[in-house]
Image 1 (cartoon, one colour):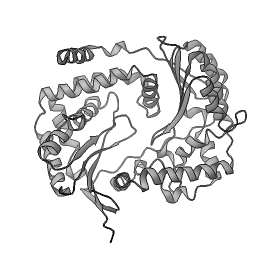
Image 2: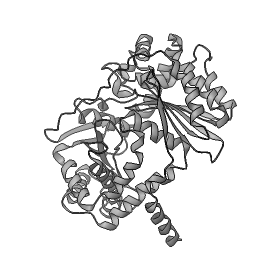
Image 3: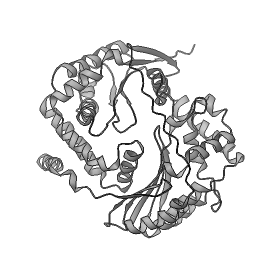
Image 4: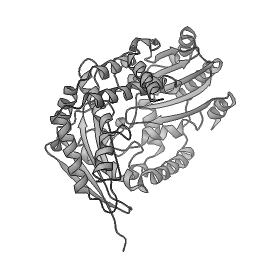
Length: 440
């Protein structure tokens, strides 16, 4: 069994990037872009409407507006009643939903491929003729505030990470939560919502992605007579400031009702810019995989299992963002484990990786894991469309998607050492400690 698994992983590494299905794309005069990946293996299709607007595009005091539209887009339009969009998708045998991030908003549907034209017509209709009624907004903003209470206010770990992100960045909009600060949500009005809609829901911010059993020519014709006929309006340049370099390490302490303490560290690091920093971004991804990619990862094996300095640990890096990413590592601490001891072990591990080349076997295992995840994702229409849309909205370009795997393959042990040594340093870090608040 082990031999079979190793053979499979070896084959995955040998799959050339050029085997990925070909993308076909076109743009319309009003700025709408269409990208299609035909896959005729089954009579289904994934439709995703991507918008170049997310939490980063909100003004101070108006955070949360991008996410508000996840709710308002289902409240009806000129031709669609409240909730009718999802009911019609369900009647087709499909499903639909939406997601919002710092960099984008996307709406998606999985449907029988013969119904894609109908879905695109409905998407274009609600996009152009959305009804923004105050009564709907007042209901949804209460739902959103409750969502925030459940996910953040009542979750001490999430709350600590939110405070840590805000403390880590002085200028970059990633310091604000996508769901918005509660004090902002309490003051948002329907006029704020309408203003945001007029400003950002414009054709030039739209990317239509279709993956599945469709014909590019037919998709081009359908999008041309739906999204392509919308009146062109100027799309604002996106806010993408250069975060000032850290002057030294920062620390915060967050006291909240909690059972156990936690320590987390963040460091601003670069994201992937094709042809500029391919190996550096890939090296950061591989270093993070070596640290936190599964039970054999170093954080778990060395700090949790061997040293017993935490009962859980992890790290994360997202190379596919705009401008920068906030790299992080954390440790969940038990009653007899101290934040100081975990922090010392974490930095000892990072310092070692910045001075000593990682073992080739460990590096190759990390490469296999990243490449395997990428190959297996090709089985999912949702993930394939998401990969295409996301790379487009952040400016990487979907045409570069195979280049990422090539970059991962080319990383050397020396690249890992140099990249960790350059970026993951104490003087660039912000440390957050969650201190359980004792109730008398």
